[in-house]
Image: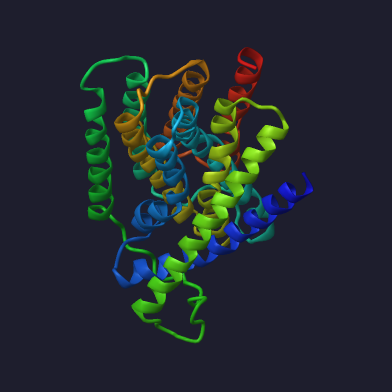
Length: 333
């Protein structure tokens, strides 16, 4: 037990340090390619930090030798969006409140493109509803629909880059950590830092997941609850860490774009893998996770569309995760 807890905290700390190096490298990379700040967060950063959860789903559904192992992949694919839509946004809200108290900011109002954020929530909601609906039916051509989910993500990436805004010049980037003395580091140093960071994130996330699974066994939790509760919390940790780092630097636009981009990946890529390699049929806990995620996204769409998103409004969405836990443990445990 003590060894499990020790590796749990060490791997979490390694993920945080690697994420800090990753976001630093990805900002420099985005500037070099002249990609706008929002696209840096929603495409480049989200793609990198979504690797752990995509890897978990891929390994479970492709190489899983039992139905239980494949169900872990499906549970991770459903639990990931739930954690992002509730806990990740709520943590950004808490970070904004804390940062507001430590800085000279007059309010916790989010500095972001509200129209774009509300559009992202609406796009995710449309894809996610189709994702859940497919978990309720059985038909022969169902696996082939995974191609449509991959196409949907490709369309999202194209739209994000096409409509990318330009990062304000006053948003200074910290020196590249692998080469801090360089005023304008070379592209090679940027790529090296990003690749090394991703390797550490992947390895540390794998260790973190193993420790969470060990904790689940020690607590005598069934496999589907481990997939819904523990695996997503582990695999979404990089996105949450990135958000904390960017909010601390006063760049909540990047933090929110990273979360929304990761949510779009979670709604498409793992879903495609699940459709390709599993029956993709939902039981009670998976349906509850889907319903709570939909409610959380509708709420987020509302506050972004109305332009009333601030730290406290984002913290409220964490109630969705509490509702999910209450329903699961009250009805299925």
